[in-house]
Image (cartoon, rainbow, N blue to C red; front, top):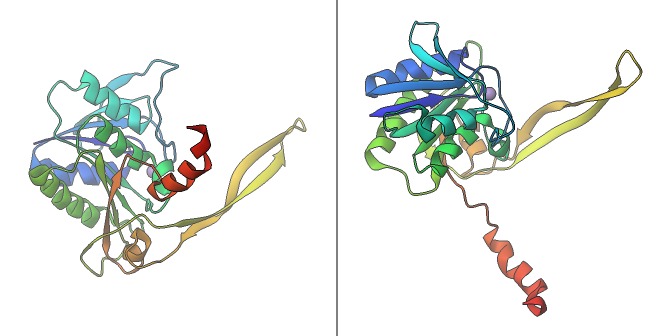
Length: 250
Ligand code: MN
């Protein structure tokens, strides 16, 4: 099996190394990861400037590729032919913060797996809520088990898996649906030394609705949350409503 590994925290992130080491026994692992932190970069395609890839080493000496682009760029470049050997599965992580609810559209970790799925390759995003010390080793082991299963069974077309591992694991795997994040963002306006305003998106750390069956619920109860996500964002329940509005325009 040939695994492409990336992340959104950058090539030197400890979560990437932990995942690389756990995936190594499964086959060949090719690492193509961003040169800097691209957390919350979303699903990005860099089209307005060149992208560079350089050979580098992880801190254990393993060979890796470092890319100037976003996580989704890393995956696109690899799958479009930078990596010559066929790739069977793309794994992204380990992100040190959970990617739950609507986080998935912001997350560079998740959108890297999304990019794989667009190219027809199974994608798996792996995140944990890092405590102190971080939970990387057990999360990496769990990720390896999930990768093995996906390698055997494949994934349905246009589907990726969003895996979140709680800081203290108190139960087994739960297959969940995407829950509802509650963001508590606040606009912070300050003045620069020349009197011009600048802005931060600040505020409190987000919470979420702990409803049974959701990713939030699984994490809250110490279960490993596996959410199958699809590319199709159509709001099927809204289709007939919007259809009725414009009936006379048909
Ligand atoms: Mn990140």
